[in-house]
Image (tube, rainbow, N blue to C red):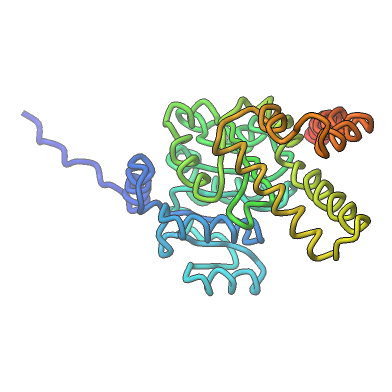
Length: 305
């Protein structure tokens, strides 16, 4: 009988990547999270993840050429580096791509070169770059065994205060690996996130991505109205902002339709119905609907450029 062959040697890279895959599958603390791009949004997400207990501060790393931005992350107790190294690439479980759209392909190429497409399937890529579609991300990752695990996330700026309204779309491989659970756990720590088909991401942009600007205009207009009615500017703005906050909280916590809540405030012949009538005459409802749709259409146009 021939000699029994010894088991094939396992490379250090294979061992590290297998450990990465196991950490990612468990969906608990211990995931190694890398932010490529250390801007304000990345900072808010990283801090939110740690504060909510869904990530350990020692497991978060940021990469950014800006020394100032790296220092911000170090000040939070996290690791930071000017560029992605081979060691960082190998150890990372979740790669959050938080760079400007024109640099996304560079980030993906860096990982392909450092760990090879054979091991890319063991990494979860989460892109928050505006205008880069799920299909484009999959194309950048290329022919990966089992398909690339990539999730596209559309957050909004209230993420900076832990109150984002976000949506995600997943590649086929990400769905099969139930990566939505990982992303949901992370982003629920800084607000709320919903899973949608990628073709609906532009609609999400219209509602929540661009939506804060609409509400800032509402608060500003209400405050201006208060000033016109005789209130000091600071009092009027505080009342307007708190009113928007309280009304949103009523919708979320009661589960009632906004129309039902509006009717509860609108007594016959009273002040509120007089105000609502003016808003209807001005076409306020249609203006908001048109704004959402216009933002959605512009999003579609930008994704084709």
